[in-house]
Image 1 (cartoon, one colour):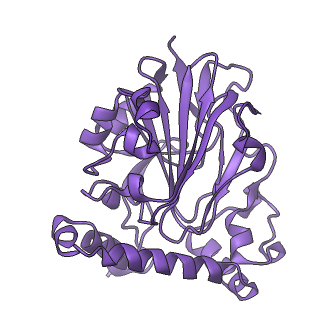
Image 2: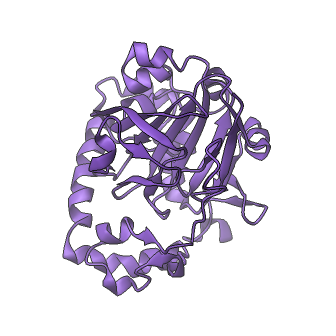
Length: 316
């Protein structure tokens, strides 16, 4: 039966901004069932000892170690074929040049494959990663329509009530990266680093099913964040969040330094193997997200985007 075929698509529906078509993310039926079993009210009620969290965290560490071995390179060819990855967009394009699966996972784009929208226009923000995005004009709308975790707020996200209060009512863009995506991430704006922090945590799934459960995915997972001070948008909060099978969240050393200058499109860091997520928050009234993102997000439809595409423009 076609719906049981191993290559059937069972993922969340997304609007591909590049092709202008609705598409379902490639995901096996078994993985979909596992997500539905793990992230539902009954499982959360039964798992009072949080054994699920401990098991997932332990498995993540082991998987990360495995993907760093020379033996792991044998899985690259199958992975490329399974997810129809166009290696012509990457450097190197020859998969035999990667020593391990981990090296392949953090592969770099070829120069010019992801042009930056209006690179000299500091009042126009861009998409930080190849991903699926939803964008909302307030944290309240984000919680109502997309991130359903019981304790999600900007304060719990950054573990700092003073900093979190600066983003009360913030406009929020939530980017979700799947394992087959390019896993380097870039700055959506130009400015200088005002705050940098790293927060330990777990490695829950960041699939749309998980995000819409009552489990506080984004505020429990391992994450790093920075505040970028800008001329056009005020302070911008950028949070990189690890997930299942992600061994670490890396920020390049120079962007960990307070006062470091960053340009729109600069590579900030990368995730290691697995799905992952990015939250970008703009202070209230400082950005107008692109209309297609707002319209589709209100319908709870993710938009498949590429790094460097337009995200929105400054309003103040």
